[in-house]
Amino acid sequence: MRGLAYFHQGDIHFTDNLSEPKIQSGDELILEVSWCGICGTDLHEYTDGPIFMPKDGCANELSGNGLPLAMGHEMSGIVSEVGSKVTRFKKGDHVVVDAGCGCLDTHRFEDTQLSGTMCNACKIGMVNCCSHAGFIGLGVGGGGFAEKVLVAEQHCIKVPKEIPLDVAALVEPLSVSWHAVSSSGFQRGQTACVFGAGPIGLATILVLKGFGASKIVVSELAKIRRVLAESLNVETFDPSKHGKDAIEELRKIPEGDDGFDFAFDCSGVKPTFDGALKVTTFRGTSVNLAIWGNKPIDYYPMDVTLKEKKLTGSIGYVVKDFEGVVSAIHDGRIPLSDCRHLITGKQKLEDGWEKGFLELMNHKDSNVKILLTPNNHGELHST
View 1 (cartoon, one colour):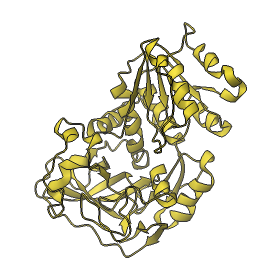
View 2 (cartoon, rainbow, N blue to C red):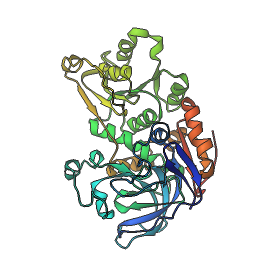
View 3 (cartoon, rainbow, N blue to C red):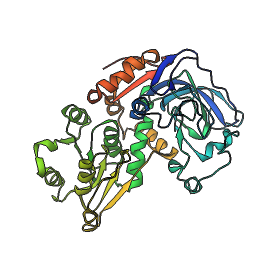
């Protein structure tokens, strides 16, 4: 079948010679992929990888799969085949995919060294923190940059047909932000400052709106990204205009002049980490969504202690986060029109490298999400 695949370090290209997936376990189903978004992680697999992908000549420790493998983990699709033990889905259903895999999938890969294992995180239900975590489309199995994908029933979430399949492909990145906001304890009517208006920052804006935030302010240096954030009808803040007084000026924006209830660092650099911590009010919460490198940073613990603040992190998602996002889009808490602002390009799978990967790497600030379609389940356009 056709696919955009990772062949080895530094080599991602289109092919029409991938093996079609076949159901191996009764709880699996096969999807015809409608749309799949290119994630920053996909780009890093090319520029810095392999990270999640197997190294050249090796196999994934969870599944035993080797290269080449179709990439793509932000997908929507239509069920085309179901296994004998599948009970919640039928042919023709529209679904999105929780691409995270771990201990709960080991029964599907009986010939690997991890078969039958259960880490401590999975034992208590924190499957997003699995010690053996991997992703469909990032090493465990072929992903959504292909005509078909094999997925376990437990990773599928049904999508009402009123939600267009291109918008449905945004559910995965939105679920990253949904998990962060939900697990942070955010409540309706509270205020939030978002640091960074990249893809996850913009997704966090939409989720905070879905949670009923009374005020959302986005701190972002790049004008083009501030404009994108403003298209979602939130207030933006340019820290470069205020120099060393930027944080104090930000803190004055919410009523009471003493900062925000919550701050979400979606950038992952020291100024945004420090800013997210300092911009919160008494017993405020700072949440790190960003993925950092291996270099440590310094911070002042009394920034937490003196106002009894909380500093926490969030990683990935679980199925209930997908369910929350789907429900919020369906009932209008996250408007379809807002979601469409995140889609800055839609391309055929064959053009995915030149008009997808390269476009994102060369024009990062002017793009949010480029979707690829292997099966043309919808209208193509590029903005």
